[in-house]
Image (tube, rainbow, N blue to C red; front, side, top):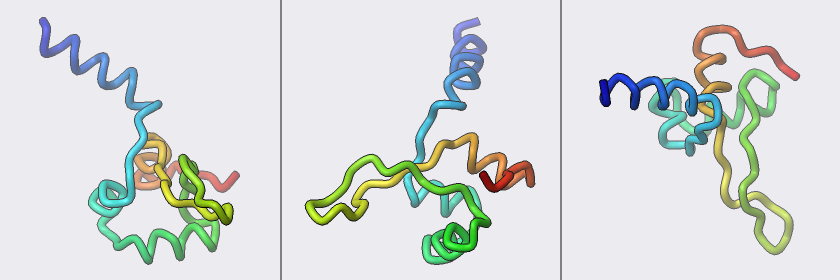
Length: 79
C-alpha cells in the first residue's frame, strides 16, 4: 500500500512539479537551443523565471512538468 500511495501522491503533486532544462531536454529529445528557439516562436511553453541577475536577466528558469508533458502529448495551447 505504501508504494501505491506514494505513487498517487506523486501524481497529485506532478501538476506543481518544476523541472530544469536538462530534464526538459531529456523528456523532449531536443537540445536547449532548440527549446529556446521554439519558445521564441511560441511553439513551446515558456519557463518560469525563478531568479534574475542584477541587470534583470533571468538566471534560473524552470518549467512546470505538466506543461512539458502537455506539449509532448500535443495538448499544449499557446496562451
